[in-house]
Image 1 (cartoon, one colour):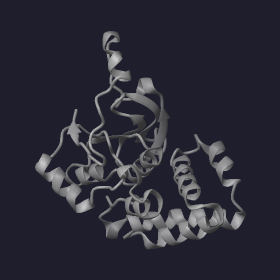
Image 2: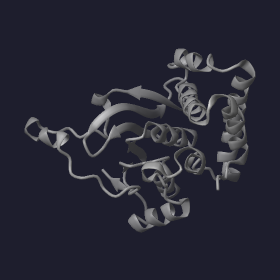
Image 3: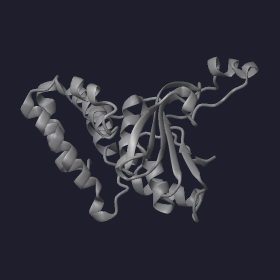
Image 4: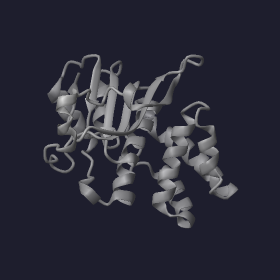
Length: 235
């Protein structure tokens, strides 16, 4: 069951008029725009114009409630979206059952109980639970996530940014090494707070730099791993 009851109520209230999938995706993209510190202002206004003014205010209130609930009584590092997404959006479609947070924490501690190196990556990140669990051991790493589902990448991106974790999230097919969109979470040069910056494929660390003679692997990847399988590794 979704633990973010206040956030859920706001989103479901708005969705009654506009449709749940559209509202949730719009909310995520508007949040990414807001966390981009002015760089995506035009896109933000383009989305918000699709909503009547009272509903746009509800979107803002939903964001405020989300931040409060993700605070997790001061502990932070709580997945702000995963349970809501599974319960109301994916319904398990395409095997999208995210690993329970306590299991993520167990897996991370089994992988490396002491601490991680400089960078930690999850090439099938979902809403970012494995990376958040890794941050509970060592939050000063750079965190890298990728997923073939754009909605999942935005959930992960927001989860990392609102928890002050720096790194990169890419919407891409990791197995085929196909890049669609990527974002970097960095410290703002003027304000010194984490913010989101969209990046190109050439800037991405998650894209493999294959030599020309190996390019045939991109179009003929190995069969996909089991649905819902997640990997956590250092690089």
